[in-house]
Structures are given as structure tokens and as C-alpha cells.
Image 1 (tube, helix red, strand yellow):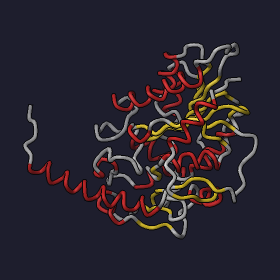
Image 2: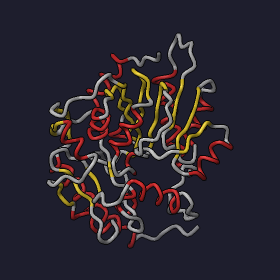
Image 3: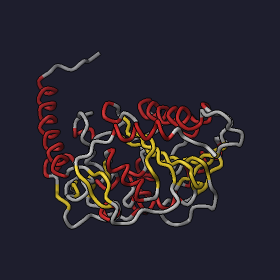
Length: 328
């Protein structure tokens, strides 16, 4: 069985987390499944989302989410039929250079912190859940050729492409309870849970496919309570429903999501000065009780963070409007 150097990585976890508040596992479980009744609308973000949509901070946990009005099936269909099939350079593709670069970063973290260990004799199994276009498993295959790789994907079109690329791919939607009965040493969910209406349901289902003591790697963009990375006009896209990207994770909320699903965080990257937020969790034998209290974000700080980001975005807009642009 693989073994991360826990004594080293747990130090990294304790030094990386910035504790602004605390909340119970039960409160986090509610935040990752529904819009809590105490959620506070972030008015400063109204100009950046589709009319009628809103972004909220959950007062107890500091979690940031959209209205959560759509069903999981709605969002999967929207991504598969409208975003992944779009030819617009403004829409997302994992083949874009910036997207490949951040996925390569994830691949190297997995290789350097999990796979590069002495005395690994048995083949190591790995699954990229909700793999999309298959960029990450292809990068990891190049970095660690002996890895046993499989993928899951909800789009039949993308599953066919994955199989044509030589991957064992299962057609299934995460969260519907229909994952095939396989088990792996390492699982990844990258830039996926932020697009899930019920991310805890998804992670709980994936947990069943991770071996005891195995590792779950979550990666997303580092955007909450860190130095501003981009204009809010680039962070949000008003032409799509806000529910297409319903969650914005911080280090605390991502670690909380792992804890809720029975994974102990054992590694956190330097998310505060990186574009990527990456956490490795190790599967524990039992799920924590609802009354366990863990680090959370201060919801007031989160609210103020976006208010300040709105002010800076207005300044960027003004500067860009008054500055000559490069015309080539």
C-alpha cells in the first residue's frame, strides 16, 4: 500500500490553513448539500452574474455558493452539451495551455508526493473521476507509465474519445449511485466539485471506490481569502447560469469537504501564492460525527473580500478604458 510521509505532510497542513472561525461537520454537510437559511447574499457580485442569479456566503461555515437552484442532471447536461462543445475562445477547454499547465501541476504533485516512494512493488491503481476530456490522465500516464489508469465520465461522447485514447472509461454520472464496483489507490477530482450542485454527495460516492488508506486528490482554483488573482468579470460569466459553477472553495472549505466525506487532509499546497488550490486527503475508516468542530472561514471576512474585489474590478475597468491597447 502507498504511504505518504505523513509526518512531513501534516506539518504542511497545519502551517497552510488560516483559521478564521470554526464550524461543526454537521453545518458543513448542510452547506455542501443545500443553501442554508442563514446564507447572506453578496450584493457586490450582482453585476457579474446572470440576472436573477446570486452568490452567497454561508454565515456559519463561510462557504461560498450560488443559489443552488438547478439539479445535478441539469448542470451535467449544460457542461456536456453547451460548454465542452462550444467553439468560443471564451468558453472552457482542458486543452487550453493554461488548463494543461495547471493539470500538469496536479500530475507532478501526485508523482512527487505519492508515487515516488521506495519499495513500491505492486502496480498502483488510479482513477480520474469526471475526467472530462482526459487531459490529466494523459499527463499522468506520461509521467508514470506503469500506473493502472481508469476514468469515469458522464458524457457518452467524451467516454468514446477516452476509450479511443486507450483509457478504460466508465460512462456514469457522479452522485447518482451508479459508479461501477472498482477500487483504486488514488483518485482525483480536479476542477469538478466546484461545478457540482451537491459536491458532498459526489465525494461520498467516490469514497466507496477508494481503497482503505488510499488517497483522494482535490484541485481547484485558489480564489478565496488570497491575493486577488483576476477581475471579477473574468471570475464569473453572466452568459451562463451561476449554478454552472456553484461553489468557490477556500483551503478551509476544501479540507472541510474532505473531512465530511471521511478523508483526513495530509497535504495542502502553497495555495496562498499559487493559482491552484490542491489538497490530498487519506481515507479514514469511519465518517466523523456531525458535532465535530473544524476550521472554517469567517463569513464576514469573505463578504468583505468580495466587496474589496468589486472595488478593485471597478478600478481595473477604469484603467483599461483609459489606457491604449496593443494593436499589433
